[in-house]
Image (cartoon, rainbow, N blue to C red):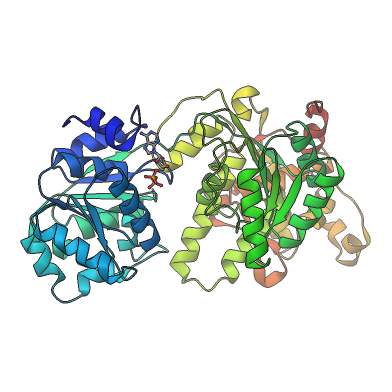
Length: 517
Ligand code: ADP
């Protein structure tokens, strides 16, 4: 029983490898250094567990999640594999059993919490027991850049030099900075074979829509999928409650969920969702971490998520069973404003905030994409794909126009009013709408006054939204969200660059809305 596919079947009970698993298993088994980037739920653990069984000696697995290690050890032991964990969660008997297995040379997988590496004697012990592979789960914890930095992870590099064995590192974090830092710290002086696989979830249909009347848009989306399990993500706790109520009134089985609920109520909601068919959960992002329901048929975002990573995680909860699933993400200028101010007002250091703006920009780029959403999404994660045929833009290509002139007019209105105003007032100026506010400021005398009469108000709103989406303008938190121009806009203003925009103004999206089934 030493070939991978029979082990896969007989020990793990799977018929086939998931995308990417087979190649990674082969590389790790062959003793090559590996850095594998796979999405959460992609099946990373198998990629070191199976090679551990095929190789002689002990595989040490470093993971920051004690509960997860204990689960894995339990599952492996149930499958007849000699595995053990040394963590702070152990009972004395468990620790004794692990030591016995080590001394008798039976142990195949030894799970270690990173703190253990710092404990006296651990390094010596690992030097003596015949370790032949180090597997590092959640490898981004070694990155000081990232959000989960664990100082003890830095000792893994030391361990590797001491043992001189291959390292197989796994993470779901795909951005280039983190990847480089993982390589520098875990593979000093070597270059691991890299795998980036499995980010595509082909059964999930992707769609975005400009926020028009969000409640109606969500109600229509849910109505067309009545009786199916779904999640609606909302930006605020209050909205989860009102929207769940509205869905119930429309005859759906719907409950709300947010972090402000008592622990018991939260657990109750999770259990109901897990067990009941066709229940809708209207939730904040607090919902989902432990949710492993395979047949969630749809995920809708009533508000824009905070980053492209968050978006991917949240839609990824749909269709785990591989059957078709659908998503819809609504977005509007208020979302963009809110997300920007959350980043600006956060306590993160400046470079982190810049990175967060970048992640939000990536999501906005996806929202405003002109071609296949899946290609745009996968390109961000480093994978490639040509038109997928399973997103709203493949279903119906976006109508586009050369937006350079409109954007330049809008930028000029912003600059002429010294970056002190929001989109509403700027659109009044552009369309020559002499409001009281316009007159009070004397803005009817500006050269830009009325230069945008060729577009209607909703069309201008779409232009401003897309300008925010392309990060040409940003709300200024110190000026109540007044719009300021960013450096990115300069070449367009100067006439050095052109920009293509989508024609889908809010008015157009109304006209095109499909009939409710
Ligand atoms: P992660 O990448 O998040 O660590 P896991 O290793 O926990 O993911 O795997 C996620 C789920 O996928 C688990 O329930 C696991 O049993 C399942 N899985 C892993 N590999 C396969 C496979 N080849 N076929 C079917 N299911 C698999």
